Image 1 (cartoon, helix red, strand yellow):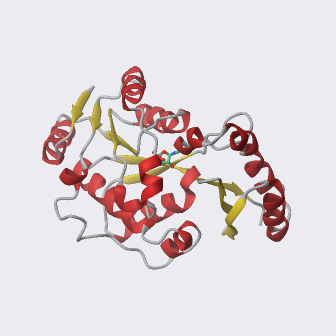
Image 2 (cartoon, rainbow, N blue to C red):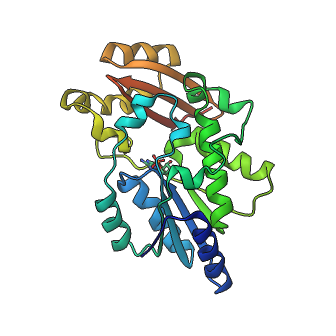
Length: 255
Ligand code: AMP
């Protein structure tokens, strides 16, 4: 696996891969990899000639500095997992390298990004869209994979690619859950033992089919601090806090 930290070097390398005739499947991540991430990488492997992964904990998408500081990092085991899946290219840029402008330029969406997670995390999606735009331009992938766990993020990225005529095809990947129903997330490892035991009922309650008001009240009863539960098209999206850990999930509903 070739590990590259310099953005220009990454761009040249990706150009060479495309020139050699291989298609590129790209999976951007923030590391602390779990089976959810690995499922995206497996999809990329099946559909593309070469797989490129990035690990970058993007500070501009964290509206809360404490959340950024607490974000888990397991770089060594991440690299082992990527090697064992046969990933050919890993991009590990620094903040300074990826933001030579010091984040004076950004990509902003003015409607969907303000709703749901965006309402309680101001600036979050501007940070996400900006870093994803940089990564997509640097990689020039044929396909880039985004998990349906972050449904709002996936939709915003898809919309950005359409709005800016990017060539990369955005592929949604199914949400991977543990047997308990809890959506896999790097943040799950930050939960206390007690909160970890409670966490699976988030999905159980969200998918109960009850009216939204009842779901919110059931979540509160169970011990969650509810940020929002809202329907968007045929999905029910939700975000809750357990102590200082934010969990998000979404389920398809019959409309
Ligand atoms: P992150 O490292 O949290 O930024 O996630 C990187 C990518 O993995 C994003 O496209 C996420 O939507 C996706 N992802 C994270 N957790 C899951 C999951 N449980 N199932 C499917 N995709 C996921």
